[in-house]
Length: 248
Image 1 (cartoon, one colour):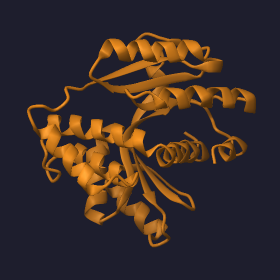
Image 2 (tube, helix red, strand yellow):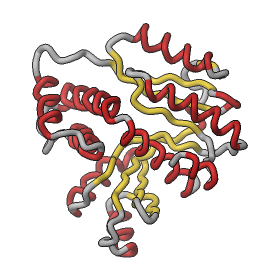
Image 3 (cartoon, helix red, strand yellow):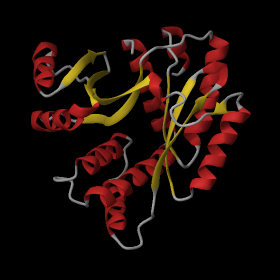
Image 4 (tube, one colour):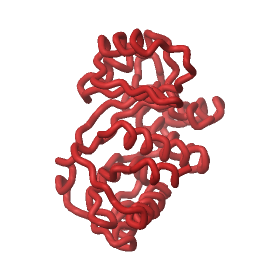
């Protein structure tokens, strides 16, 4: 994925987090709940929970809210969430993968299908667009100017990184899915504070749209991301510098 496009997509996602913290808190709480059920409430031994908590901190979720979410997820009355993925084509033929966490699969698929249809897209079958994406570990680190680019790059490559991109605001480190845990441990060992860390679906090819088509797709993505059951949305749109500026 082109460096600017990856940066623009991450920046867009971060901007939405800042603008809709309530929604983001709900998504993080769901991630914490699933992580605790999967690996227990101890962050030292549960790497998924550790990342979920870090992602909560990156959107300024209060510590007591995080602690309550972990405690509730550990109890017998915790929500029973399921993780599910949908694939399809959005406006202008853009391939889209939607990751959801839900307590009602029927509601979720109906809502996702309706959003696709309303915006001129269509929900596809499993595997219809998945082959166009690769699962990668993606870690975003605030660039405060204190990390030497060469030294940092050598260290994280030793920890399993495939690619390191420095921008004025963020350092984005990418790994193969199989090296995600190793790289997370390496960054922990280095004492690096993450803005976010997650497995993402990175497109193998990109599509460029004109500005009107871009705006149409962004309206669709905004509505999809705003659904309570949707955790993450991936696409292969190549965001130009001019279009990236429209996300500000």
